[in-house]
Length: 171
Image (tube, rainbow, N blue to C red; front, top):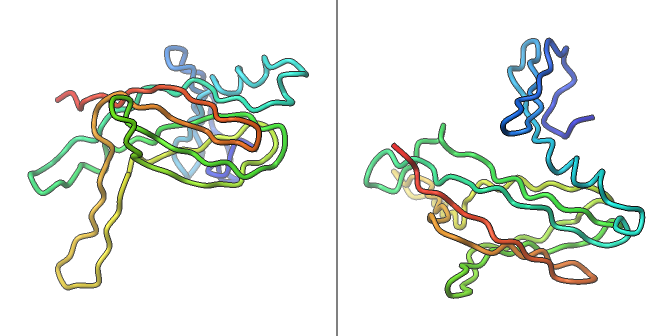
């Protein structure tokens, strides 16, 4: 099984997009599914001893979504999920944090239960969401701004960190 998002449907074609190292799957009736193979390759290369400790793999750069107007709205078709991949030797609770590299300000935090083995969390770049039942209120999502950040993975054994970049939208 290749993740929770690939439904049980007929697969029409498989291809590896070499530049990004993505497995692209064309399905019959459900569209296209893709999976980056880099975390799988990195996990496969772990030695037996390395599989007994926590690992945080390289976090790819991401792109800030395209803004469509001055009301803080973004073009939803330009939102991409940032894959954060890590290895855990056992099922355990982990905390994921993102801080600004310049001032150490906490930008985002999430607690999850990680399963044993390779885990991937796909983050939508949203740092804050506001909801209201008031009439004419549009749900508001604040996205992380372009810049350089540090991702922290707090595990029961240690804290691991990696830097990553959010790039400006190129028009």
